[in-house]
Image 1: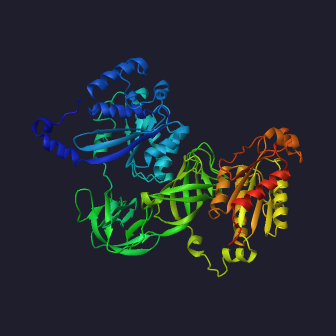
Image 2: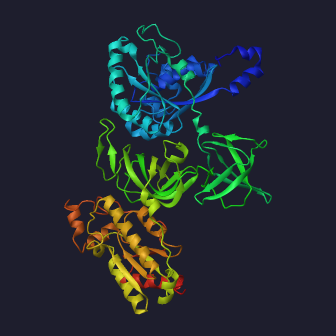
Length: 634
């Protein structure tokens, strides 16, 4: 490797010690397509002499084969590792690279410029201390430049460098530089980027990268690398109140019980009072344990195990905090959400929310607005599509300890995960808890679910029939209720069409309305089961996520999913209501099975094939299953 320090030859131990104690700066490069992000990082690696000789030889060979510089060294190939990236000359995935100088260590994230890969840019920015926003001097400020700048501001990255690249292709014109700088400064002021450093450069030629270039005598600011070496790495987290999300309850034997995690802010010492949240129980730190030995003090950024003087109930996902300055606890919030999935965000659909080490179920209400990153205009929105940014309210199924994202990224930043596929679909920043989360409390009632069920001599439950329109759900549900009623059971049938005449008369048939339709019916079913009733629900309910929501609202064993399995061709042949005919003619939009999907159950308790049995036989099978497998008695 070409990078050499005088200490290597003189005192290798001193060199290693100095290297170990260098500060670390994490930064990312972002901007629009072909602004030169990968080339810039490749140049930094090359000029900082962090390339092995065999890597350099391979780079020279690859540059002749797939490079874009006419046989000259193409520095972008150092970080564009995917075959598709090399073929297209673009960055698709986030590429992380390490390099160092005598003054500092660096981890740089090369993020993609294409709009469809904006989600990857958010990933790279989530841990960055600084951002280099590149602009092609020939093109000026573009839409993706604005989008990435807005995300940089949103994610709280404090150090911003505006790298106006490819100045050699505009003759190092100061007028071009000043024009771009003025346009960007106007936009930066609007999004909250108050300070940034603008540098004219040529990443390919190396001008203003490691040293001041004579090609721009009119520029008297710093070169890029010297600037990166002197940017302050924020240590203010140590001055904030103590916070440590519990990652693991450490119990190697009967005599030791500790709580392990990464300290996200503050300082802790043995003898300090702490509070465990959301329970609110307090105790005192007894020891700060690490792999090697105990510590007298631990600070933000360290992973430790704390033992306490009291035996209190603490689990993974809880937060240990300074007793005198704990974070708030709530289950409803306002938040900014960056949507990162090809499938749109649907209000009311349940997602998993991961914040720190805690995972809870979350629902997003209809966005208050989404943001036009070009004009910063607030636009009305029913949903969020891929790469859109919106402000929404969140409702969680359990309270969590949190800080506003502006105060603590670890306790204010979250991701959203699809419950079925486990895909990360969104990222967000908490603003504040909604007042209603503090003002609404459960009222204790003396007559409970078991008491009501005992009075009826049965156990309340939901029998949820799902299937295509025309599959026979309503007919079967009606026969099942008649049979249960004849047996003296207390029942109620919620039918999709009937409910739309009253409770859900304000809903249409868009995906958003379908989600809300099922959410309301699931909540009503929960109340009816609490009243001790056996509730038959006959709804198409096309999405697995919403059927999962309905199941999760009930206690274990109180939800029975019945898949009325009828092929689309058979259901369309029946077409009792003439709906398929209208859908085929384009007169009925968003019709399940035609232009809106149906997701069959994967693990239904009961499946009935209506092509192999009559409605009466299907109903008898459901009743027999209920009587044989489920105990109605209390």
